[in-house]
Image (cartoon, rainbow, N blue to C red; front, top):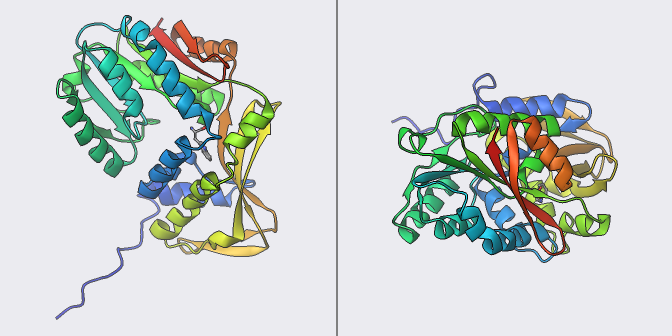
Length: 320
Ligand code: TRP
């Protein structure tokens, strides 16, 4: 009798983008890792926890903006539309739109985390039976095609959560342009983006007292250990987040607490004491700077909604 293999076969670098991206990112100087890999099952759950933290004003503020303005936004949406959400995570925000706009008959959540996507889609189909759900498990930063049924409908892109701020401005612009092609002619695009504000509010939002953000950041190393046969010592790295005013962004790092070596996929990486891995940027925009970005990518802002503190903004864009 043969003994079944307990370990999956080692990943092939050439065919595994996660392995390839991690090796490339750790080989660079400075070292970096791509934020899209935060969101495995554990990471998605930790991020949900972040959205409920008292310091993390973004989600709660965006939800209020959406709730307060859903009827006005709904009035712009054509009959029999499909709502196409990029980076769906939990469908809480989409639900607000789907409930306020009964003329939306399809929902297409697009997310890199397939497991999360499946369970959320099933829940939504139960809650709003009128809406047909077509989940697409893919990396929305790469070109992809919508399923045939929603593609025939007028499309409304939905990109909440300030995810657009997690890209370099030129990448965010490319992404908005890519979305324009995917959504098709005359599409609308509802996009959330965080507003520039005082450094202390921003600092607290990315350095919560309970340490959930630190755990979320460190989960990226835990995921690399789990999936890529690596040996990061999680206790030997710490979370850092600071506001870079000149660049208008929060920068998130993992800093090595000591000089150490880490092995990933058969390669060895040296860390100096204090050396950082850059894991995320979160750009903060003014209404003016975000509108300019959108225009540069082929969209015209037709409406902008903010909260009374002007902490966050939701833009409704229309194709030029
Ligand atoms: N899109 C979120 C943001 O920019 C992602 C995020 C929140 C995040 N907290 C984080 C990413 C901490 C890395 C680390 O606000």
